[in-house]
View 1 (tube, rainbow, N blue to C red):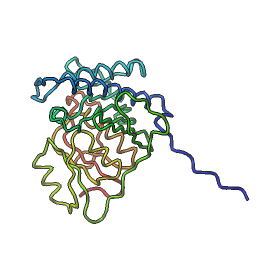
View 2 (cartoon, rainbow, N blue to C red; view 1 turned 45 degrees about the vertical axis):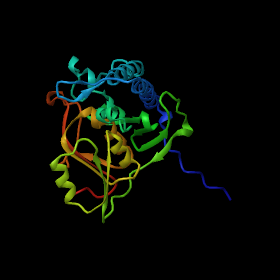
View 3 (cartoon, one colour; view 1 turned 60 degrees about the horizontal axis):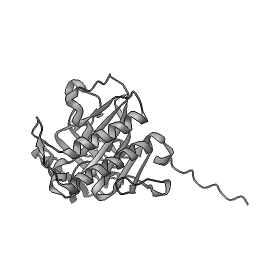
View 4 (cartoon, rainbow, N blue to C red; view 1 turned 30 degrees about the vertical axis):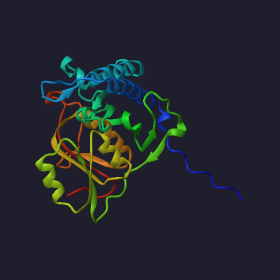
Length: 277
């Protein structure tokens, strides 16, 4: 009797030269961030009163150099280079980069900061890398498959390093909610209060998208204004893991809105199954 064929293997990040290249860019940026963190640094204040450090700028330079080699001619919208004026045509393919998401977490020394890199096509994030250098935690998402790996900054990533992950089904009973460690707001608090909550897990940066993509939480709501580079990589990751990311009203969250200053006026992230009410 013929043995049944094994199920097909999900495509790994290493099967995609572009996604593997984005992972390498994040890992290399992590080397610079950790070096500067060890050396000591001072923070400056940007025009919007948010902090910025040498680590933000060096990491962005490293990532942009990688992207120029990986995808010549594809525009890059990166947080620290925004003052230079990013040029993105409607529907164009482009990268969204936050070289150090969670600068406040970086300043506090709690390790909950990330490097975020996303590829956007026709307004939707299709590839996403979220990397936490201090935690050696690397997430990757491509259509239909999400993964995590434990890799130190600068380390190579081989096929066997990747572990498939996925969102869990949102339960009918009490849910587990991820919340921002540094950016709470009354509207988000009121939204969470309407739900039966089993546990609240505070976390910094795009790590909250990773928690949801791993099936550790069910809901991540945010009603304050953020920027497209804060959410695009995590959005791609959660989509790849079987979850959903929308605007607070349930409409599609899309990217490349230069006329709006690349702002995102809140979002909802949840796992498989029912949407939050």
